Every structure is written in structure tokens, then in C-alpha cells.
Image 1: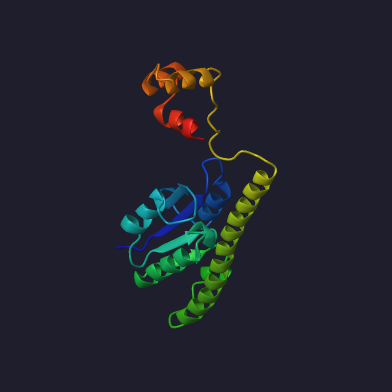
Image 2: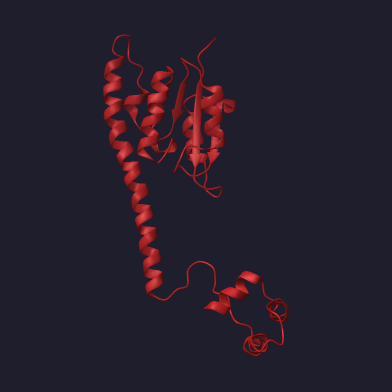
Length: 198
């Protein structure tokens, strides 16, 4: 069975464009049907296209080409896990943005490539994770700043209807039941009791 070359491209959202990655992969001579695409976050590996690629397509002796290491994942542990998986299963990973991974070394000298790759992978894996952590931190800082300015985050608070006081007074006087009060106020049970106990 001949060894195949696959390409993998990923963007985090459906609005983002894959063109740059696809052009780079096509330039490597990869057939269109062997390029797998995902439009999902790189926070973990549970992506439809990627799972199909590693579980049903890639075989020992195949090569996987990606544009940059963070296309695999933005999580350092996941990147390392995948690289170990490729190594164990005899799959060659080439990263276009890491020229040393693209070189085909003569037999007997593969250790040079492996050593260089391991160093680069370690460094890039760390960068990818730091990037993700700084995004999380920026989000947290943004939320804190918004709260400080008095912005309401999350679901809007339930408002008491205009007839609230008169209906509740009737209920407390025993003239109507809680169910009837909810009906008159046009409220759901949870919202009603939330406001009642606030």
C-alpha cells in the first residue's frame, strides 16, 4: 500500500478564512481530497475532521502536513500527546512554518531531524499555550473592567411588573393563591419565587 500525504487546516470560527492554509497545503502537492478541514476551536482535539483523520485515515508511513503547529492544538499537552501518537504510529509530521520539519534527511540521519523538531515543538507548544492563557486573562480583565463600570453581565435581571405590589398584597391577605398570582402577573414559577424572595 502506498504512503499517502494528508493536509490538515483549521480555523477557530466559521467566519474565519482557510484560504491561506489551503494554498500553502496545495503548494505541497497534496490532493484536494486528502486535505481535511475543521472550523472549530483549538482548545482541545475533539474536532470532527481531525478525529476522522487520526482514527480512520492516517496509516503507518503516511505524512501529515500542517501550516503551523497551533493548527493541531493551542494546548501544549495536546500537542505533545499528538506528536507522541504520530511517532508511535510511524506517521511523519511536517510543519510548513518550521522549515527543518520539511527536510527529508537521508537514511540514518533522522535523529538530527527528531532532535531539532523536539526543541522547536517544545518552544512552540509553550508559545501556543501562553497565547491561549493570555487570551483568557484578557477576557477576565475585560469582564472585570465591564463590571467596574457597572455593566450588567449574564442574563438580565427579572423585573417586577407594575401590578406586582397589589397582586402580592392580595396573595398575602389570602384572597388569591400563589398560582393565581403567577397567572395574574404572567410569570413563571421560578421567576415569581425569585422575585418574591429577593
